[in-house]
Amino acid sequence: MSEGSKTDYSGQTITRENIVPDTPRQYKVIIHNDDYTPMDFVVQILKDVFRKDEVTATQIMLNVHHQGKGICGIFSYEIAETKIVRVHELAAQYEYPLKASMEVE
Figure 1 (cartoon, helix red, strand yellow):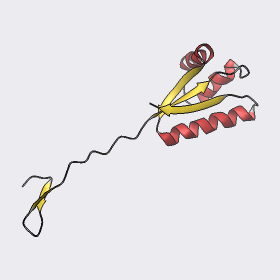
Figure 2 (tube, one colour; figure 1 turned 90 degrees about the vertical axis):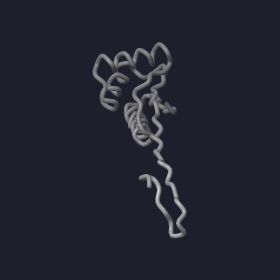
Figure 3 (spheres, one colour; figure 1 turned 180 degrees about the horizontal axis):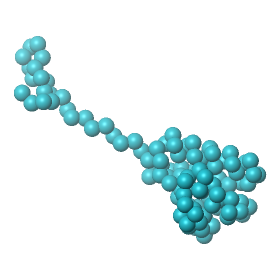
Figure 4 (cartoon, helix red, strand yellow; figure 1 turned 135 degrees about the vertical axis):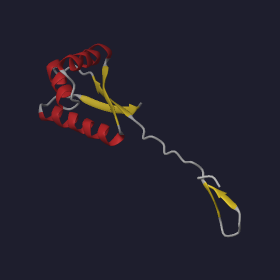
């Protein structure tokens, strides 16, 4: 008898499918450009919230500035949501209109 099958009381063989759980969806967190938030503030957000080093944070900030948005990282839904909330809290604290969003990877 195979590992994935067994016999029930009536003598019939019951096979159990090998079920592989789906990996959780991943989400890109994106910061969007605006005309008011200073570039150094965006770099600081990237360093503090997303744990980016200075060079990487500067490159992402330049993507935001030149392309209108920049990807800050890829996370599970809950972590992405938490990071977006933190970005919005810090932006509000300093009265900047900086926005972040997420989309499925």
